[in-house]
Length: 281
Ligand code: NAP
Image (cartoon, rainbow, N blue to C red):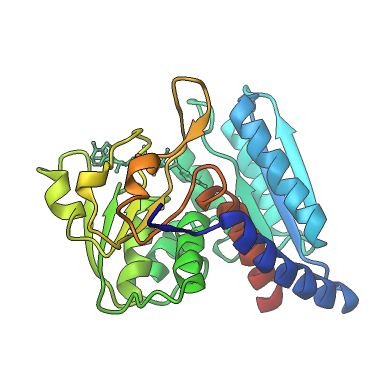
């Protein structure tokens, strides 16, 4: 294997021990950091995500509150709970697990979260602050990717970065963070013509589409850093990313595995955002 692995579990462990240290310092001053997570409905995947988030808080000394509601919770009732948590001094970070049931307006819910508690970084104020180069909360997944690049001391400034995927939660904020770090950034989406002509130019290639094997070895510049955000299932039902890992690792300089890459970093950065919010208070 040519590429070096960027181990998200190992890096997470290091970052989480720093979070635990900072949480303990705040707790000693009587200001234990707190995160509230709201889950509406019974999606098994969402249940696992919120359980992992709450457990990660407990392991790091962050107070956590999990509020679970049936799928038929009204939008008004959800907004009322958000308002109460916005005003709860014990809560520094608040997130509503997505997706929400179809009768609830997701944008309205995100905008109801106090921007200074929006640890997911999805609120339009936080998207605007990121866009204008003065981020308050960086969305967790792209923030984690930046930490991965930092962990290998990668010179992002001046590098060609290609982000495949342009969602509000991953691709777009990823592109903004890379741009801010001085990269020359290309964003690709499902309408991009000749995807390979872009990806082959990438020193840093971040792939976040939810399409298995969308990036194959012939699409990667030798020595590039390949960050695989995707989470899919292969034919055996095993978790896999968007990148053809077995072949791309022979070409890339660095690569992130799935599982054990970006996934653990996302939860870790949620903890980091919660600590940052608590320290700002
Ligand atoms: P999303 O909202 O579905 O967005 C997917 C993006 O990929 C869209 O911008 C879409 O383009 C683009 N795309 C789709 N097919 C493409 C193609 N053939 N060529 C180029 N671009 C293409 O997904 P998301 O929420 O960003 O998530 C993406 C993946 O990351 C999913 O597998 C998700 O499970 C995973 N994820 C992982 C983590 C983690 O912690 N590891 C966190 C979040 C998400 P259009 O804009 O044209 O539709």
